[in-house]
Length: 216
Image (tube, one colour):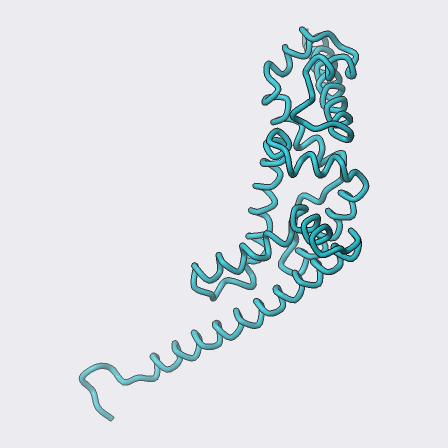
């Protein structure tokens, strides 16, 4: 029984992978809103009935394809500290440049954005955590504003927008944004250090004050 169950699980995983491969391949050429489930089933080599067993709606299929595309492109998943943010952006943009139509489909269409949402939420959480080392002594509202600017820059929409609106090549836009991220992280580190020094200075001064009611 265990062997049979394991075999069925492996077969199901193969079919699911074939479906997501077929959908990702479609997204390399077609607008996601134009992709029909019969097309995906035919590309995956399965019946439409089988496809519906795995994904009863197009939305469910697109919910699943986001992580599949991330793995297919080899996009970095983790950010190891504030100084790693620019590197992660550079690597993501480099990988994205290999499948420009797929990236645009994930960014600018309704179903593409739906597919991308889980990865983007994880990326925002990861970058926010990485920046904690350079925002730890800032007021919470100030920290959020600065994090927001850097998080936006560390995104594929920022890269494509800078390239298209400024007339830069994809590579020049990629390197320009990485420079901006590094510059902002460096400035944020200095600001955070100043705030820490000021807080420590106030703490020392308060400890040196005589108790209330006592004069020197």
